[in-house]
Image (tube, rainbow, N blue to C red; front, side, top):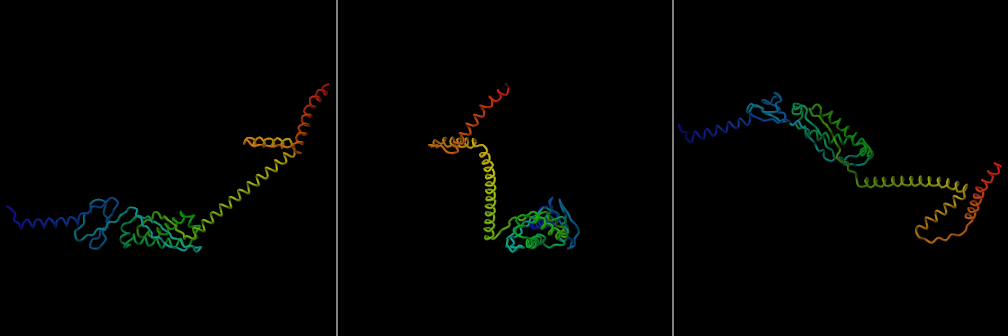
Length: 270
């Protein structure tokens, strides 16, 4: 029996109604999601992952993402313990461990964690001095994480990590720290220079005692200096000095002693 226009319109409307009902009753929950089922406003359980069937117009499903989420805490101006104004930029990493608590006990846990992160950062940073903030970032991160995690645990949320992205200082403080670092480097350079001078003076004093005991060594050192100067093709004028005469006399005496030793040994044998 052929269908008339009225029957065709009726079937089309019926098809639309069925599709609407199916769209309301059949949901696909992803692997990292969980669905909270509310039947006439009352909690009846958690479904997923996979296909979830809902009673049309009676059941309501709230999807909760169980992956690690991040909250970028806006920059906070904080006065440290030593009265320095700094701007702190941080990130909070958290994950929903209990979807039921996250939905039933908090209206918007994302916003709540962001606000909690701001207040906790201000409280913790306000109790520290500037040097501690700059040198103990890891300890500060752990401290803030523990405080936030302890508060959010009843919400079914686990805070896995808190990181301070940036610590901005006033321009005057940056210049002062740069001057301090430069002064510290100058102090170390002067100490090293003084240590070198002391070592050099000690070595020179030992060398002077050696030259005093051995005048020939001083003369040989003088001649070696002349050789080093002559390497540059310079004109050298050498005049006789007291030291040279002394050195010559010492060399002559030494040679005479060396010659006398064989004669003494031969006479002793006789």
